[in-house]
Image (spheres, rainbow, N blue to C red):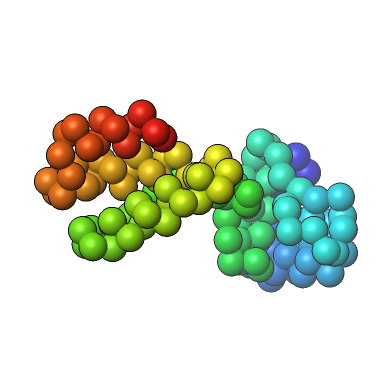
Length: 128
């Protein structure tokens, strides 16, 4: 059913359905046993029945697969920040273009803690 009526199936039926989805890989993208992505949709059945089964079976939410971190976590210790800044600057100099956001965050925190001056901060921003 597109929108199963929860009043007509039991917990045992739900457990059996979960087992069928897992054993047949019908819950996985492309029905491939090796897939780490769910066969998802925006439908009622997926949201209310299949998604909770996926989370129970595989221990993570399907909507977070492949999204990565959205925040940069940086240390508060000024010595660790300076060491991180040195490492990130060396990484950037070596050609790594994916460190810019973290470099800015580290510089912002160093300025906030008054470890670096505004002039040095401005110079760093120009090089970044």
